[in-house]
Length: 68
Image 1: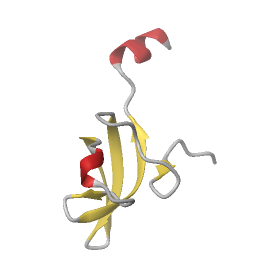
Image 2 (image 1 turned 120 degrees about the vertical axis):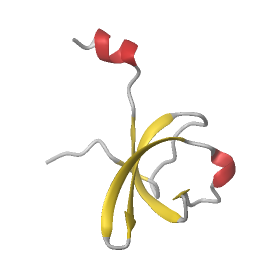
Image 3 (image 1 turned 90 degrees about the vertical axis):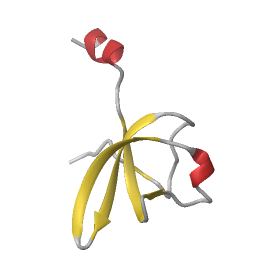
Image 4 (image 1 turned 45 degrees about the horizontal axis):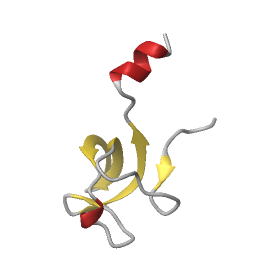
C-alpha cells in the first residue's frame, strides 16, 4: 500500500505550511495538525519535545472542492 506521508529525513514542509505530523509519545502514536516553522528545526523537527517522524500536507478547502 502506498502512503502519502513524507518522512522528515527525506523532506521538510514549506515555511508556514499547514500539515499533520506523526510522532510517538510514551509508546503511543499520535497525529496532530500544526503549522511548520523552520526556525524550530536544525535538520530535525519536534512536536513539543517529541521528534516528528513524518508529515502530511493538509489540503486547502479550495483544493478539496476542486477535486470533487
